Each structure stands twice: as C-alpha cells, then as structure tokens.
Length: 96
Image 1 (cartoon, rainbow, N blue to C red):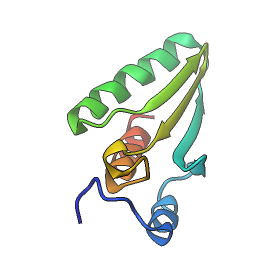
Image 2: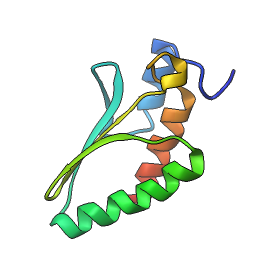
Image 3: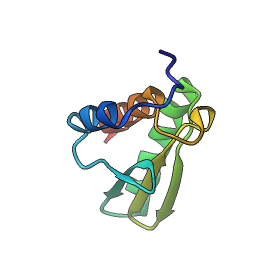
C-alpha cells in the first residue's frame, strides 16, 4: 500500500492508539497544542515545518498567540487520512 492511499477506519483507529491527544475532526487527523507564549508556538511550528518538508507533506494549521491547531489529510488520497498523515503526526509528537 502506498503512503498516500486512504486508510480504513480500523487502521485510523489503530493509529490513534499511538497518538495521544489526536482525534478525527471533520475527517482530518487533528490536534491542538498550547504553549507558554507566541515565541514557543512559532518555534514549534518552525520545527514541524522542517519535518513536514522532509516528508514532502504539509499540514493545514492555524496559529494565534500560544495556540497551534494542526489538521492532517492527504489530498492525493481524496482528502482522506493516509499513512503519510500518521507519519507526520508521529514526527510532530517527537518535536513537541
């Protein structure tokens, strides 16, 4: 199976077991992060950007002050969750 093939519901449920705090919201792998201040939040985003670029898979994200919201979905998989999203979520967890 390609890393950009959509995962089944069972595969997504299994993947979530190893991704604490992650959930499915609007069909996307989702997590919200809070930091002490904007500098820490932006530093986190910078580190995630480097990992995302290495995987050539970029998150949908939103930042206001100390909050970063990340949604992951694979456009090549018909805007569904793929193994690539799970891999990036694990990289994000390593960064945090």
